[in-house]
Image 1 (tube, rainbow, N blue to C red):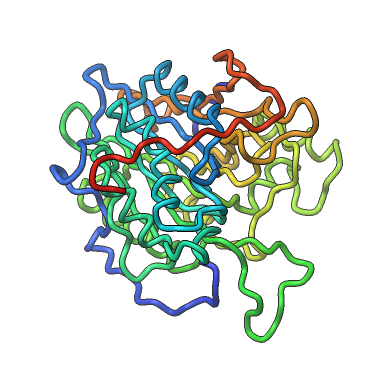
Image 2: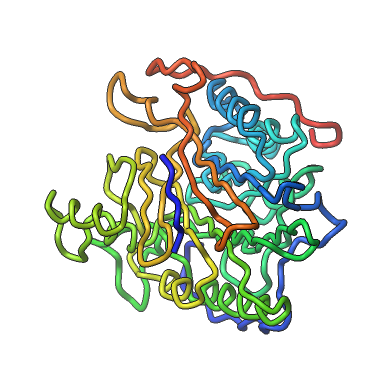
Amino acid sequence: MTLSGVGAAGAVAATARPAAAEVPATVTAGRRPRLRFRDDGTYTIVQFNDTQDDEKIDRRTLELMRAVLDDEQPDLVILNGDNITGGCDTPLEMRQAMNNVAQPMEERGVPWAITFGNHDEDSTPTSGVDEEQMLAFYRSYRHNVNGPTARGVTGQGNSHLLIQGTNGRPAFNVWLLDSGRYAPGTLAGQNFHGYPTWDWIRMDQVDWYYDTSVALERRHGRKIPSLMFIHIPLWEYRFMWFGSVDGRTAADHERGKARHGIEGERNEEECPGPFNSGLFSAVQHRGDVKGIFCGHDHVNTYSGDYYGVLLGYAGNTGFGTYGLSGAERNRLRGARVYRLDESVEGVLTGTAMRFASEFGIDLTADDQWIEPLPLPDGRD
């Protein structure tokens, strides 16, 4: 599938709005592997979503990751949330689970970064390792390019990655936002019964994106085209699929499909949080983000152009998680690939899903767990 022409759980806390001029949480040149377009002006990003296992990972998850990396030869990989899940009882098992999904990139020297999803802290109560410590662990790897999390902003890992063009100036940007875990039990004395119970992007995160985007434009004299990665989808995904806020019929979808050029499958309802965060409105107004991509809903793979911004899913990489029903359980295991070309307006030229079936990987509807991969020296 190719689409071109890209036109923390808990009560909400009041936080200081970062000054726009600071441009916080950027990976510093020399501190991390340099992100730079190839000499021919192209760049490839791969997104893996919901690898979601404990220290004993399904062997086919790693087989799929390695096959995609070897075939695509990407310049950057995003692990977009639910990288691990419950079942880790100790800090060592947490490190083993995280190491499993880091190794395919580390083995190949491919720069990579993570966002967090709703399941990453499932093992925190038993292991004592929270997302702040997880981020520090991921950042300890040689080829990880996560920056420090933005100061005074809800969540962990809110940051952005500037990618240099062949002329040494920023040609593209990648936004990483923590979409949280679950809605709080109550807010303003009211519960969320009847509403979605997932978390949502908070307003201080939207402010941080907007102010940082403005600061980057001032610094570099132009808006930097970009992609944004979040784990939990926005309400606008559902609006786009049905071409409507209230309609849910096949005819509504056909209207949405025709208007927004939707491609891909929708096998479960979108699972956003109870509030519309306002992130899409901010992105559409700024005009720098060419696409917002998520995971979370494992058996959705669709993507479409929603009023000038691509909205899409990456499907599900992890074989140890839920999938389709019955014998088709593993049919949609895959990864999403993004093609960039700095000579093209908007830079993003297309995106496509790559599925495990393309690489001859066993799709049997069972579990095939293996022992943890060896930890690098000094991390045991």
